[in-house]
Image 1 (cartoon, helix red, strand yellow):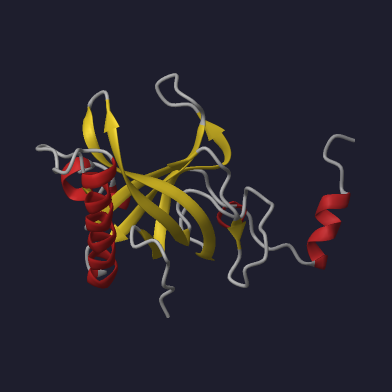
Image 2 (cartoon, rainbow, N blue to C red):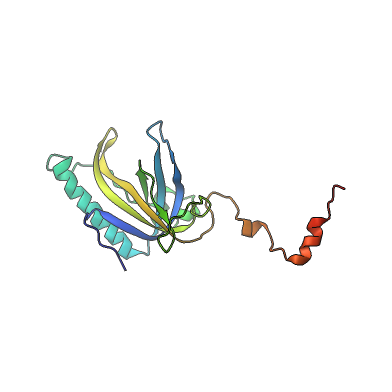
Length: 190
């Protein structure tokens, strides 16, 4: 089921993989104001989501014509939807995918599948799958005019392999049973 939003430039990115997730603490890029951010990786096979995103981007372009660009669409408009195969060919996580980079000055609300707040940063990380709300918006910038992506809220859908290279505890350790307690009680330093 897809939610409908009043703002036609807002869309929910359903079951996307997040990467470069700076969602718990804001991070400064290029010595600018610190922001919360993530990269949302969308499978090229998810044509319904990609079409919904294109409609939201078109709504932001229309808004930009009247609010930012004096009735016209600038040539060489900087677009927010990127092809992972072209722009990140050496990153396996982006293979066969499109992506957007979303940012916000405000902290996103981060919730579980039941819309309960998640407070442990270890629970939502680069590599897990989430629903993410974003709003596309027009801007005028030093490097050109374009469509930006505002980060809304995040709902964790499922775990995935960490993209940070960090191993999970499950992959590092075996489950110990009560018989293993004897080994732990034997102190090798005595």
